[in-house]
Length: 275
Ligand code: AMP
Image (cartoon, rainbow, N blue to C red; front, side):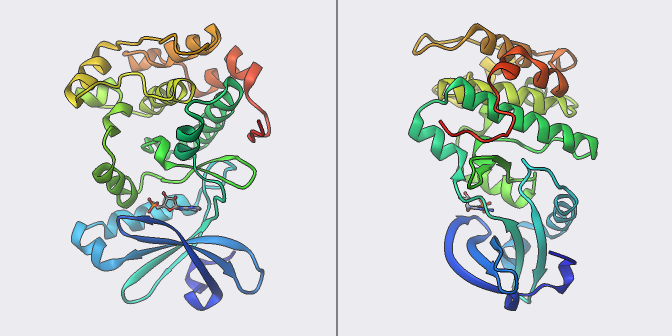
């Protein structure tokens, strides 16, 4: 699809509603000329006004529009009318990774490693483009028809904030330097990859506790325990331990994650997972 400004609602056949966020709904749609299937997110301007997100949305749209990576959900185009902003997005047919994790309870090592490698590759690409700290959380990850992971929420205030209000447990992904409100850089993403890797393998994030204050205390202590509920390999635990390091400068880099023996052994290079 070409220049954003040239698009309008008339170019699409709008199908069923496939999701709902705080600022509006997401619809399945088909571009009339090419027949190409996309997802269209409709954001109501009145809701943006209420939360003063206009400028932020615009900046984030511009950032995501420039990104083109197999594990980053494409934003093909955007346009608006008097009351709504429309985002034309790549359609992630298999939906939320979180739902899959809930239904399978935990992922196999192959599946977990494939997703961690996909995330590390996508984040390395973003960092190269100077796009940092993207608020990666499982509810922001979608799967396409082939099962390839797509980072869907690109740190858009509108999306991440909506999640923050509706989701409890978001603090589970906070890096210690964020809990302590210290300056932080893209090493927070590497911490989050450690949290996600653990959650993929065990089905729960590592520092979960009865109340949020206890979670924060466990994060600051890096109170990491590996339950014996089921078998997880020593190499997987080694990767998690090397990511969940309090000193952010000592965390494994994204390139080192991609070379880690557990990733090399288990990740599917196609980024898809059929088992
Ligand atoms: P959001 O407003 O981004 O939170 O989206 C609400 C829900 O719509 C998500 O939780 C997804 O289930 C669904 N959704 C959003 N974007 C897409 C997409 N590009 N492809 C498929 N489903 C989507």
